[in-house]
Structures are given as C-alpha cells and as structure tokens.
Length: 335
Image (tube, rainbow, N blue to C red; front, side, top):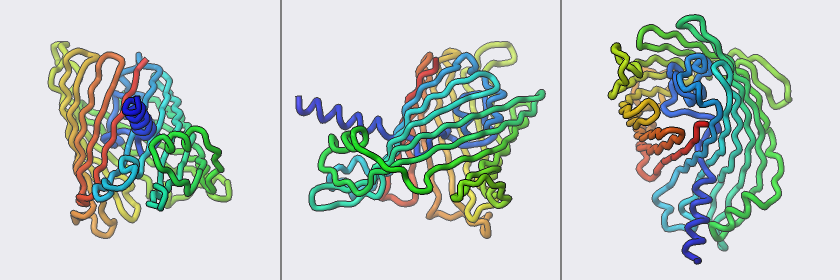
C-alpha cells in the first residue's frame, strides 16, 4: 500500500505542473491556424479554426527543468515545475480561456529537506477574431494574479501536495497583470503570414493602463508557414500532411528568438492522427541578428496524438547546457 500511495503522490505532483505559460502552443508561430492551440499564438487564428465542433476544451499540462547534477538530492523530480489546469470554450469567432496554476521556485537544500516557494496563479484570457476572405484580424485581453507561500521546507512528496492544496497563501507583490494584444494573419494558397504584438495596452505597477510604444515593438512577433491541406484535390483525406514554419519572436527586444519548425502529420481518420514535430531555435542579440549563438540554441522534439476527443502531447528539449533536461506533457479533451 505504501508503494501504491507513493506512486499516487508522485503522479499528483507530476500532474500538478505543466506549461511554463498558462496559455501556450508548440510550436509557437503566429502564422499557424486551424487548431484551437494555434489561437494561443495569435488570436486572429480563431477566424480560421477547422475544429469548430470542439467548443469546450479541458486540458492539463506539466513542465519541469531538471538538472541532472541534482538527481542525488531529495525530491529531485520536482525542481522548477509549472502546472496548469486549462479550460477553454467558444465558437468560430471567440474563445474564452481560464488557467489555474501551481508552480515551485527558489529550490534550496536545507538540513531537514528541500525549501521551495509555492506559487499559485489564476489567469483568464479572451481571444476574438474575424476574417474577410483570406485576411484575419484578432484581439486578446488577458489578466491574472499570483499568490505565494515562500521558504517552506518539505521532506516528502506528500508535503508538496499538502503545501499546494491545504496551506494559506499571500498575494505576490506586483503579480497582477493585464494586457491587450492585437494580431493579424493573411493566407494565400497553402501559405500563411502572421503578425502579433502582446502588449499594446498594459497595466503598470501603479495600476494605470498605459500604451507604451517600446512594449509594442518588444513583443512584436512575425511568422510564415506552409501546410498541406487536410484533403486532396479529389476530396480524399491526405495521409501525409507536412507543415513548415519560420518565426521571429520579440523582434525589437534586446534578444529576439528565432525558431524553425517542421512537422509531419499522419492522418488515419479525420479525428485520428499522429503529429511528429521538430523545432530548432536560438536567442540572438538585436545587435548581432545574423550571428548564431550556440550557447543559447536548442532543439525540441515532440509527438502529438489525437484520438477522437482526446489529445496527448509529449515534448523534450535538448539545449546547449547538458546539465538540464526540459520536458513537457499535456493531455486535453475536446468536447
């Protein structure tokens, strides 16, 4: 029974931590569309959703950065974990999403065990978009807050569960946020182009809503992609459905992020497929935009499986720092 209980507690901890961002998609390319997760990259993608029958989505995601040099330490499988329970619902032109998160940070080894800061978060997001022929425009409103229980020493995985669920939290200072973003997409044939800025209007520390031109430029992202259609010219389901993408994120910030992605979806039925994903990315200084920086480059591999109303994804990241292992998994139900 003790072994069964330990396994249950471990699974609870794992299922209590997912994406480092409450609303995110992988790959993150503002030109992607057709699936509900693409809306998280660019709200205008909602105007081209093909899975419109899925009006209610419940998902649970886990993410952690594990340092291999700490595997001999106590509670080594919970280091910098993030987990979110996501709920989304909407139609062809609007999607409302809410995420409830549990996160650990500031991990330290102490005499009696491991010290963590336990953080809970509540996040909401409203995405709206419309299209005129092949051009779409979208807007996003999002906000949330965080609470913290800091410097708590834990000696077992059960203690992590107890601190997450049965402890008193205090509001984290300056954790409230509110953003208004705008995006657009243009489609021609099987090609798509996208543009999105995440911080057109923000709530500053004085709790005043401000428009900051620097924030608009710093969060501006551009993407272009190609994807084969779901059906062939004869109206038959295309078994091979590749997609290729190029994205520049946070273009005018001090360090922009570049990502090249390639996918191969195998469609067995309209609602049953498997998607193999590979992404290369790196972070580059705005002063050396054409220079590859090996120390900040990474490679991500993922497998995405859709079976009727259930979707499951596993991701793994290879980075230049070999001491760290970055992985994510997510499960969602499309209702």
